[in-house]
Length: 159
Image (cartoon, rainbow, N blue to C red; front, side, top):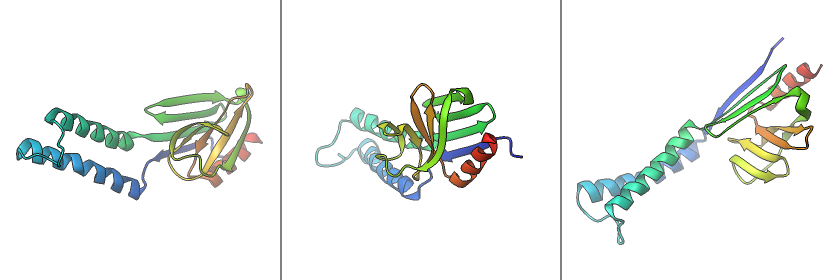
């Protein structure tokens, strides 16, 4: 019998990376043109310092998407979720009222979504997830790309 469920998800959508790289090209061109060739970049160019700052912010956003990951581990002790580098949750079965694998539809995008009807939603893509209701009334949802496997594991662990 499988003793635990593990899932690790990253932002791997090709169109997202195409968009991020596309956005990242513009500041790189600006730095090359303005700082190396000494030509103004655009009709209303930023200062050199502004261009460097803007470029660093864009680079930081691209790196952030590269390191973001959603890790879920479920075993006989409870549910552990980590949305690296921001959130870590550990809940024991004693504090959980119910868990259900659901299709939650669209909740305003991917990432960390606050104040939804499911509580806080942690996802990286898709619309399937583990809805968790705690005994204290709080709830949250962890996205999954393995809904069938997760549901089967939960049925085994509940019995």
